[in-house]
Amino acid sequence: MVIKEKINKIKEDFSFFDDWEDKYQYLIDLGKKLPKLDDIYKTEEYRVKGCNSNLWVVSKIKEGKMIFLGSSDSVIVQGLFFLVQFIYNNEQPQTILNEPLDFFNEIGLSSHLGPSRTNGFNSLKKHINQVATELSNI
Image (cartoon, rainbow, N blue to C red; front, side, top):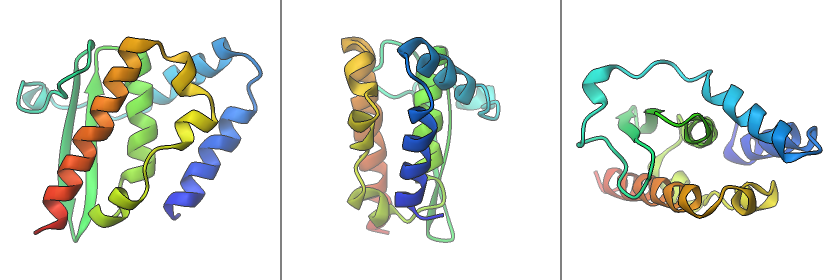
């Protein structure tokens, strides 16, 4: 599945919910699907700076494609990371750099997250772009 198809799937999934409580619950449920991140990665080295909640992201490259592992102590942030991982896993670094996560505005998440979670989400996007930039130069 290419990134555009993944984004369209997420848009479609969120369109089934009429109110924000249901969308938040869906986001929380998505976050619960993430595999458990090994505690050895829950260190400052992997923590995304700028999040009020703890968010740890491990970025790897395998056969030219990026793999992201992550965890958060916030169920909402965990769900947001699930969406980012769903879209960007197994994509080339340059593809990630060419596909910003603008669809979050389209499904209304950006306007309903609140300032601290929005800052944290922006920090996650910045972190992923930085890693993708570094790895695209290898």
